[in-house]
Amino acid sequence: MSLGRSWASEDDAIYQDAIRNGYIVLGWGGEVDWSDPEFDDWEGIKERWRQDHPEASNNDPNMSQMYAFRINMEVGSLVVISDGNRKFRAIGEITGPYQFIPGPNGEYNHRRAVRWLWHGESLPRELIYGKVFSQVSAYQLNSQAVDWVGLEQIIGSGGGTDTTDGRPETYVLIIDEINRANISKVFGELITLLEPDKRAGMPNALTVRLPYSKTEFSVPSNLHLIGTMNTADRSIALLDTALRRRFRFRELAPRPELLTVIDGLDLALVLATINQRIEYLLDREHRIGHAFFMECQTREDVDGVMRDKVIPLLQEYFFEDWGRIRSVLGAGFISEREIAPPPGFEGLPRKAWAVRKVFSSNAYQHLLTGVAPNALDDMAPDE
Image (tube, rainbow, N blue to C red):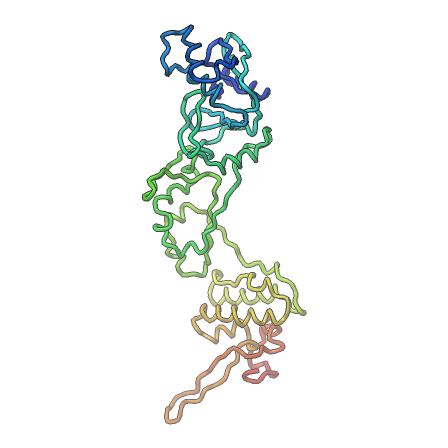
């Protein structure tokens, strides 16, 4: 239903009074009191109006609008107050029957009591309705086009007060490893709709027709998209340029300060030391995240993370260059021995590397202090 135009001062007074006093009002229907039970159906309304206006057709809004207002609306019905054909500014529940209350200058004489569920600044109709509003004063919406979830959220956020803007809850869609996706296949035409000003209800709102359902589709303004990626992944260099322009990029660096001391071992210092050496030998994009160690409760848990997660990751980073891996971790984790040339083959001995079956008791101490491997005199080749 319409309660006047928000930009017209005389109409705004009608709207504001209706909000303050809990009612909706109709201007059609003249000065006839339609409360008598004889007007409980279409024929009764038509016959009475034609007594004064015999030339009136069945499309006369004084009859059709009164029928919608007087009969179609029932106690308990929801009424949406439109603001033009693309916005709405209030939602209420009909709480009483038709009333004839003469308005100023003999206009707007017909009322229904309303309990306002939400009212505030005008919102885009796409939040609750999939079609453009009609310019008719009062009519029944197509229930199949109503976004009932959106309607419920706005009603739940408003409480009939002016303390909220009534916008629906925020939704967040997280796309993990977004840089590994085929962006053109994932988003297609929707890539343009992600831009803030292209969202539903925004100044440059756009819609697309979905290829299979053939329905119009737009991206609501209350949807936030977060794409995660690992900067160490070489595929980041191939990230779609269109995607780069539509997202803000924020680095989430490792946070060693979130780690605790376990069995006398300062995990924060261990991680910071490892990352400092990785950054020197490789680059800052390959630093190890603190999440690896967050669940550790004992020294054995830390050893398990080092053996099963950190060392395999370093193997990948350094392409099995065990000398560099040992430079990062120290000799307490990686053993070294020499392999003599096979019989009958002339050549120099080669180094062989392996992850120790049992880490040295002072492996973390040597990792932190940076003691050179040849200074370790308390470890056999494979402790």
